[in-house]
Image 1 (cartoon, rainbow, N blue to C red):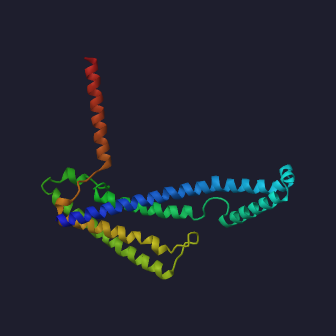
Image 2 (cartoon, one colour; image 1 turned 30 degrees about the horizontal axis):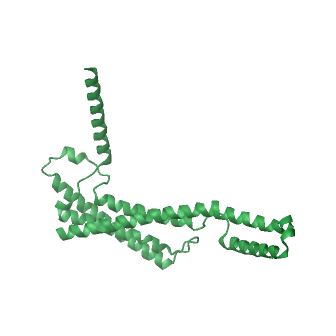
Length: 234
């Protein structure tokens, strides 16, 4: 059991880092896209306008032809670089950012499942006898595991079909099956994780329901405010 728990912890650690790297790359791409549009393009346009008007300026007449030749060389280089890099933002940055957002979000889903922070109805917890709740939770884990493994099976078929069709994104020129590989991995990871929870209930994380937790915090806060007001009136 400890060996299984160690494997799951290592898996979660790797997925945490992978998700963090995805969001880091997403941030860097957004910064690079804005910098290209606002800084580099502005600098290139300024350089082209200055070097284009320089030969007719009084400074060029004073310094002589050598400065004109040098300015024309700079203008030619800046013009060629501008044509190569293009104007506007980085063309493939937005599409690639969507890929990183997708990957990061899916890694986050796997981590949420590992911590028990997922959406689930709590009706059974309040209606059924507490003695059978542990068995209900084991059945829940088996159902969730089978569901995710079935999704993994479907996603593998989907990736194989995409690979056979040789689908390529026209902007990034990346084969789509490479991006879609995240789906089989995530579904297999979550399916095997919940299967381990069903087999070894002692390592099952306690359920975290954000709505219930928020309601409890609000009730505690209201109680503390009421208690403070009562003391103040006394």
